[in-house]
Image (cartoon, rainbow, N blue to C red; front, side, top):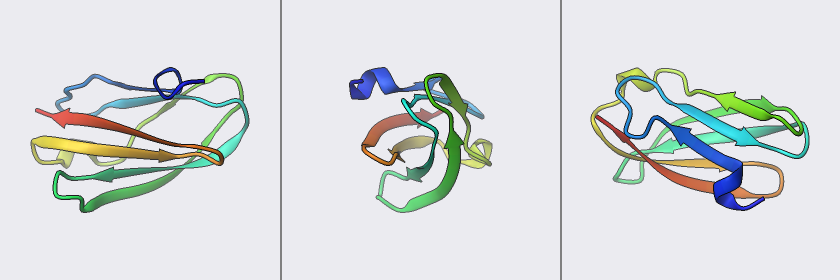
Length: 88
C-alpha cells in the first residue's frame, strides 16, 4: 500500500475530534504521535490495529488542542507515516 492508501485522517480541518483511518495487513501495535508546529511532542499513544480491515483510531483529548497546524506520525512495525492536520 502507498502512504496515501494506508492512512486517512478526517475531518481535516477539525473542530474537536478527528479520526485516523489506518489499514494494516497484520495485527500489530502502532504508535501515534502528535506534534505542534514548533516540533514539540503533544501526545504519544499506542493502539492495537487488526489485519486486513480499516481501523478507526482517535487520539484522546484532541478537543483541548489550541487552534493551529499539527503533524501526525504513525509508526507501524514496518513503516512510518506522516500527515498534517489543522485544528480550527
